[in-house]
Image 1 (cartoon, rainbow, N blue to C red):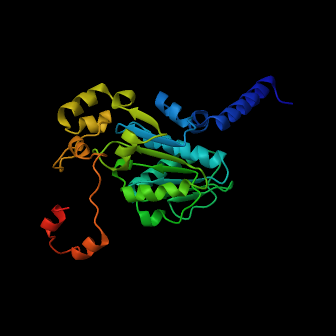
Image 2: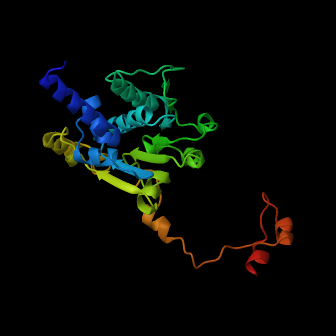
Image 3: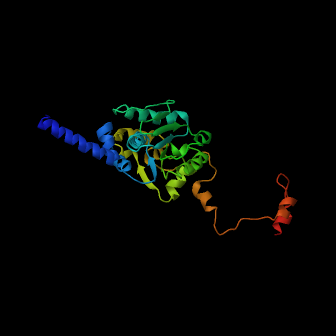
Length: 279
């Protein structure tokens, strides 16, 4: 017969087990030993289908999403989770964080086709892929897609990702530090509708010291982008973002040509500008 102390301990374990299944932040704390920052806890427990993380470097975004991916894999049978980034190295780094958390659990993956793929007894799969449209196509019914370093992932890849979530009604998470006013990461952050947004400057990360930030502020010309989540103008552009945006007007109709005109002035030859301008 168990002692009173053992019975109390068993009841507490049962209680924590229920909490871990109901809230990802409890699972991360109790099962993985991950003490989340306030924003990380809020993110982990969010039910939003579309989330974008605009974060300082070294703020813990990859670690947090790795914990969420593991929670999905072990608590929601037959999940299909894809971890993606611009290149193979970044995808491997995210998978390594996932594996580090997995080693803290009593369960293990039952099959690993490669170092970038894990399959669990409950039917869940976790796959890490490099940022290539060719490697992504063919994967379907994705329940959770995490795009790391999204500001550097090609837009063609992002456009090919979204249909994978159609049947499963899956979740899409974009996370990155900004990289200029361009691409889908910037567009989603500034214009996207229905997205839950998190902006995490370096000061919100207790592991980054004020002394280090003072040094970076003085010596790093990319300080505002790397640590304050600012979308800065790129060095190689002739016109800045606001100038380009101001050049467009919804009140100006596009110039259209008839089939006869297109046949008269085929692509690759000089146009008769007099005839065109006379319109």
